Amino acid sequence: MGKPLMVCSVIMLDYRFILEHLPQVKQNIAHRYMKADADKVSSLFTQRNQLTQTLQALQQQRNAHAAAMKQRRDVPEQERLVEAGKKLKADIAALEERLAQVEQELAAEGRRIPNMAHPDAPIGKEDKDNLEVKRVGAPRTFDFEPRDHVQLGQDLDIIDFDSGTKVSGTKFYYLKNEGVFLELGLIRYALDILTRKGFTPYITPDIAKEEILEGIGFNPRGAESNVYTLEGEGSCLVGTAEITLGGYYANMIVPKESLPLRMAGLSHCFRREAGAAGQFSKGLYRVHQFTKLEMFVCCLPEESEHLHEELRLVEEEIFSGLEIPFRVVDTCTGDLGAPAYRKWDLEAWMPGRANPPSPSGGEWGEVTSTSNCTDYQARRLNIRYKDETGKNRFVHMLNGTALAVSRALIAVLENFQEADGSVHLPQALVPYCGFAVISPRSNRSKARAK
Image (tube, rainbow, N blue to C red; front, side, top):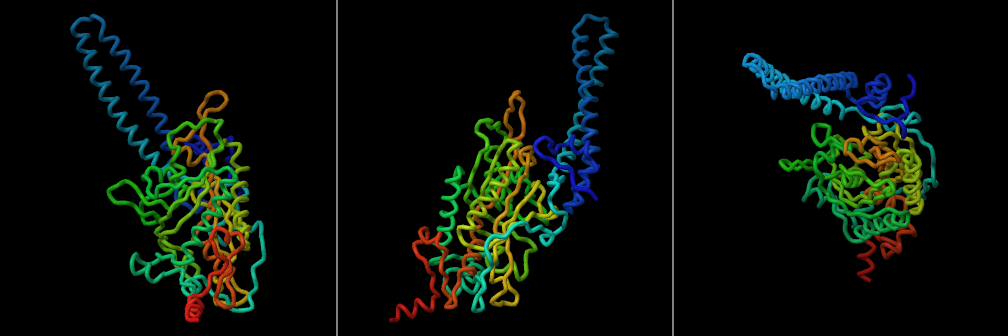
């Protein structure tokens, strides 16, 4: 099978695009392993257009009929016009009802159609099909058996999973002692990098309306949803600041001269993580609540591919500065998510993910991702700009994780641990945290005893 049709700045995914490029759209759905009916969308779009044309013709007849009724006529002719007017009114009402039904069904089916994928995105179903394109740094070889972050967090007395489970349930945790300052230090370290690069910082709401989530491309309901909904409120806890940053300009026309807009949003993130389990999901790797610093960009269509590279390079700079080995992968079509045209993941080396543990073992674990969503989200959120001719055009929208703090904590603790159980922080974090070493609780107790 050939590569999906490229949809860059000059080709946009809309109903007419689906109709005119049906084979490519269907192939793209298959490559993404998603359930969507492009044939039905095409059929409904054609029906809507036909019904709209018929309705417009009847409305023109109604206007002509209304003009005719104003003229003086004999009684039989007047009665005939009255009856004809009643029929026109009934026909228009029935057609409007049918059109509303078709438009509602079209919108529901259209929301299931994913964005087209970049022609170079690897074809595959799972993360094992992602394509590694770059490595930075070399995994550390220990002269002792490294601990995982769960054991380190307990020994250092900085992460308390047991109390989190007791109070809130599984996959919740407390940070304490130096762990609090380590999280805050990581956030400030990344924020300083982003502000130097022209990102406007935000602290965003942790709740968003369901229509904003749907516009961004998240499913707020259903068995497969990863979202916590607030029953009776029509809103949800956000899983990422991408949602609240993306919704910031909903239903607005952004001045062209202000583009690109670079936003950096700090928020809590809440995820059900339904079905997430296993050796590599323990501890902080998959949790129900964590803190994340998110990058978000609105730009001109012709800028989006360049800016996508820029976001990835920012992520690389953050983790290079933390001296953590990582690799970059080009995400396969089945792991893209519906809104993404192309997605890069950064995977950090995590020594504690070795199974069984060994001095030379470890595993790559995703710490950031960045996606170019082209105009997919902008169409759904109605975010536009005026081009040189004054015509409204949809912006392109991109997002990227500057720092998912829980996973950054894993990488720092596991890569910088020492044989005595202490953790020496990367130099870049020391000014932000105010200390260079976190010692095990037992060592502190001995020090106090002396």
